[in-house]
Amino acid sequence: MKQGVIYNIQRTSTEDGPGMRTTVFLKGCPLRCQWCSNPESQSFQPQLLMFSDICSACGKCLNACPHGAVILQKDGRSATDRSRCRDCGKCAEVCPSGARIMSGKIMTVKEVMAVARADSLFYENSGGGVTFGGGKPISAGDFLIALLEACRDEGFHTCVDTCGHCSPAQFKKVMALTELFLFDCKHMNPAQHKRLTGLDNKRILANLRALLESGIPTQIRIPLMPDLNDSEDNIAALATLLRQYNRNDVDILPCHAFGRSKYAALGWETPSMKAYEPAKLQEALERFARHGLKFTLA
Image (cartoon, rainbow, N blue to C red; front, side, top):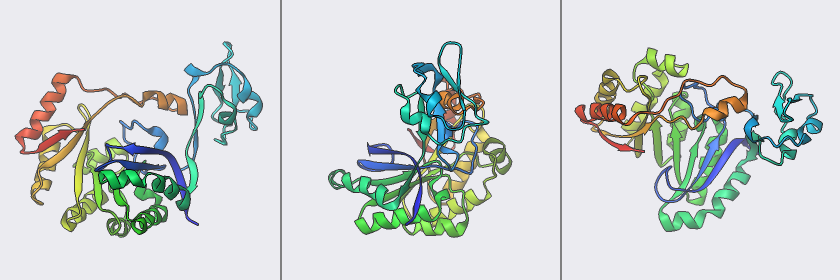
């Protein structure tokens, strides 16, 4: 039975496709975007997050950890020795304050579909369905394919939120089972894309072109970052590509810094993430308008 790692299932969502939806977040992403607001989605394995500011200093985690990774600090609160931690989750199981939580749970297709099936009445009444996000859900390989096939068999509308980084053969399989794509365009220039995300965009652009040529409904989205991908050149390049397919519509997702605390909770260095000031965002939006792009702020 196919299984994969799910780090969240959001029910009755209204922001991930039409109608009310069940959004399934699959863990794992090949990119390392400098602005990532969900760093816990990057690893393909379950991970421990430790929010020290809400630790109640009860000490239960100290006895629960089988690897000696829990450290008690002078104020009684706990910390984690990441060199010893094996992300087993034993400490999270006994934490009463929610300071220690596990991101990622191994689930089967049957278990995921049980959740979706419980929400099916909402789909019928609203024109909704199931959305697969991440992380990057296509990275889940055959697990995502099996989930999409199960949704098709149930008659559930399917949506995939992706940046399109995968082999053309894998993307073709996903296209055959998906009724709507939410496609993120992070940067049009290959070198800049690699600088900002760790990988170039050769595969991404090839898959985007195949998608636009297919006629499958697609919403183009750009996570907009101050001084990183909001330049005149980048917006002009995106407009040029879309015009080739008689498209001029984009969804803009302005940068926010909501995920900063998660980096510390994972024991990672916090990146320099900054939200837009209103005037600077307006300047960026005017660039989209100058290049004939109609945008929706998400």
